[in-house]
Length: 224
Image (tube, rainbow, N blue to C red):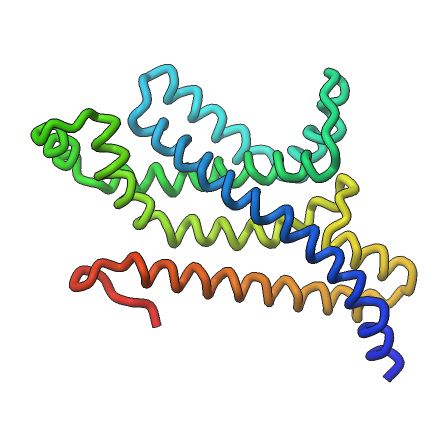
């Protein structure tokens, strides 16, 4: 009973504060990361030679550097050149760049799966290359890339826990403070893990509903 009172009286209020910070990190990182991934992925397929290589290099860097190293550079490294970011801003920048790099790979693969004849068909009806990509090819590619991008969104929910490494006290950070003060590591981090599990479950269900909404009847199967 004592452990239950401790969790209800101290752990849950602190974790609620941390959860609000985590959500405020995840939502903009999700939106901007997906948008950046679409731009990068499209540029890597349809960009000019030098621009395509530039985008490939950007993706290589942000996929190759561990995320925690990227966060350290954003928060501790940039002040060396006169750029100061708050812990929250540095965290969002790190999450957006990392997510965009991974999303771009899913988008690139989906774009390459679209038959080249659709570009020719767009030209045949008077659309420019940009209009064909925007209105014909990209919507199909985004739909095909959704399962992979959804997986990256779930990863984002979990690796948002790294924000506390640069003093942005979110859900995991609040848990670390509580556990260090009470030495109840099992109780605290088990509760933190359950909260992340609930978040991932909610996101997974939302993505499943979105996939079913985008299914083309007669061509694809609904997820049940």
